[in-house]
Length: 124
Image (cartoon, rainbow, N blue to C red; front, side, top):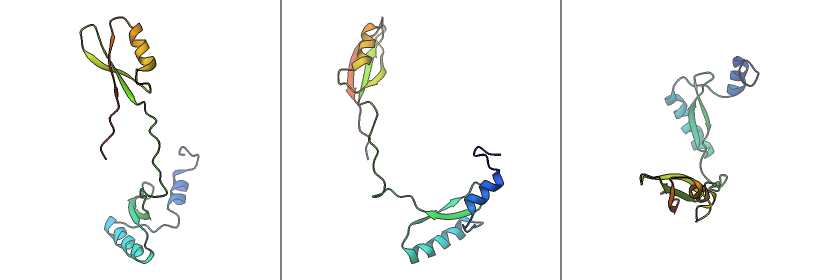
């Protein structure tokens, strides 16, 4: 039995049902190219973990149907120095002054707030 409660054989049949199975990636890619030319769809070839053959599926592209998820990460890194003068990143905050993380540092013995800096944006 697998996690879903169905036997592996039943799950394999359900996941491969109605799909052409190819023994090689090249054969599946050739068929996908032929189908794509007629239907103007973008297709991809993938290896099936259930039957261990290759299938053709719809390509997952970034496009109009996908929208960028909002960045829910904290915006500011909070850095502090220990008693030996070593600076470390100690937390993240949405507040430019370090917020609760900065308060915790001020209460901690042997630590001083050294800086709060904005998170860098990743290069595209």
